[in-house]
Length: 187
Length: 137
Image (cartoon, rainbow over all chains, first blue to last red):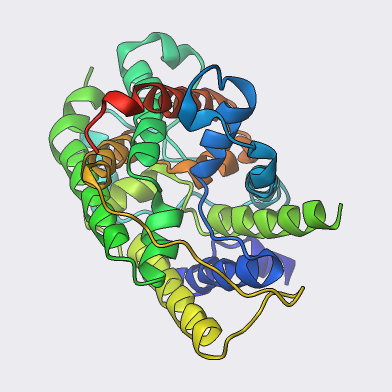
């Protein structure tokens, strides 16, 4: 059993489990799935200043921060107690194209050449981690949701703005992947 | 206290699933944006389908919360931010290979530099909040 759980979980197991988070949150607490809100609550709790958008009773939404803390724990368990015995089984085509773009280490969840502390001081690492992270936080709040709140919860709840948002997520992602990332990875 | 335990357990399950199915992997996002694997599409698609069926059951059977309250869901509003913000997030998603959920899971998984990713995302949210009155909506 444990050996089985350590293998990567196939999409037809993980997808429905992620989807079931929606009714569980609703039935157990009348809460709607959405994770990017936690970033806003952190801002409201720590640096609200005189910004109207951040002056609300964030403690009322603290469930979202507790949920996010749970995700950290889940990540710890998944990576340390149920460690996948082998590298990610990526498609050969992806490995080939990334090798052409200066990525050689395919162990772990992200390329170690980029995601390390020293790399933050390089232009490549700074753009991918700091600028990219900034865009994730700025964009999700501007769009009022991320992959969980719009693409999963919103579309499942038949909200057409969420479908529009998801299409825009993909347009942005495709543009970067195909036109910008090849340049950045070769810096 | 009970509430805290409840949401920690649900969050832990969520993070565990994201991690074990490799949805926190930068490589998997590259595969997705290059249309070279069905994996991520299968995850997102089956999650939406499961959520959709669950929500239909909740609505049609008038299922209530465990404390007997009516279940409510906010409608998502459309404005220019849906498009502009959506494009900006999509670009950040492809660069970092992470959306907000996976950033938290990556920190737990031991990728310490993901803390910088989280701090950058918090900074982005703060700058949006600051500029909100001046941005097109």
